[in-house]
Image (cartoon, rainbow, N blue to C red; front, side, top):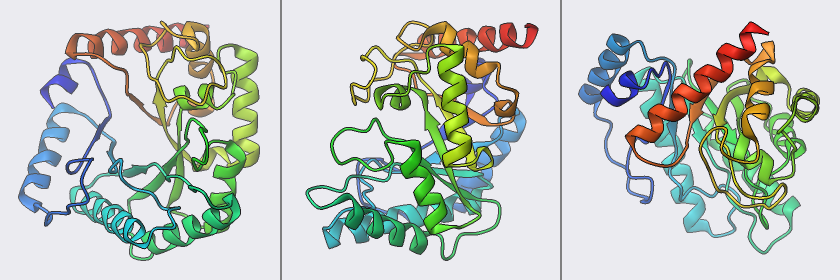
Amino acid sequence: MQHAKNAGCTAIQIFSTNPRTYRVSPIDHASLESFRAMREEAGIFPTAIHTSYLINLASDDEKICVGSLRLLKNDLEVAAAGGISYVNTHLGSYGKRSREEGFADACRALERSLEDIKPGVVLVMENSAGAGQLCGGTLEELGRFIKTVDHPQLGVCLDTAHAWAAGYEINSQRGVDDFIYQTAEEIGLDRVKMFHFNDTQVPLGANKDRHWHIGDGNIGFEGFRALAARPELHEKMAILETPGEDADDIRNMETIRLIFKGAAAL
């Protein structure tokens, strides 16, 4: 928490447990209350939980489906107990079966995860880089999930590095404007609750999930400046997932703050 405060963060994303295990521990209410108090003292709101990397809501393996749903429901319960606004999840992969069959199963899993969701918590689906049979690589497919499941506490998180890797050319004002227009048409901007701001060095449409420092990659200063200039995004939560050590975090925070300050002065 101190590092986030030193970096000037006003929002934070955490894991509630080891992100590479199916193990679920009982909710530690005392720790959650302490965490809430630390956030209040540091002025860091809102907060998101990033779910386990093992979650695959579209799998045709029953064991994986059961484990994924247990992990997701646990994070939703932790969020409700800790006053945490968002639970951000990857959807997984359709594997070797048809996308339509996998899509239907993923929708059913989302519906089950939302059955007992508490007020004040929103489950957000993160866009993927679009490789192979990954779910949610396009704005159209994310919009289909929103429309099919049709739950008011289901939203979307847009990762800029993933969007670029999936073929969305968001490194210019025109490209960003087109991207936001498509987002509004396919998903609805009210359903976009979060952004992950990450630059990337992969070529456009490479379908590779590789994050890089803000302004040093192919999205560049112009792309992030164009995003910062869109007034309808100003109230959205944004998280940096850039690589490196503590000093890199602070540098990336300083960079994105300067970009937003410059965009506001235009």
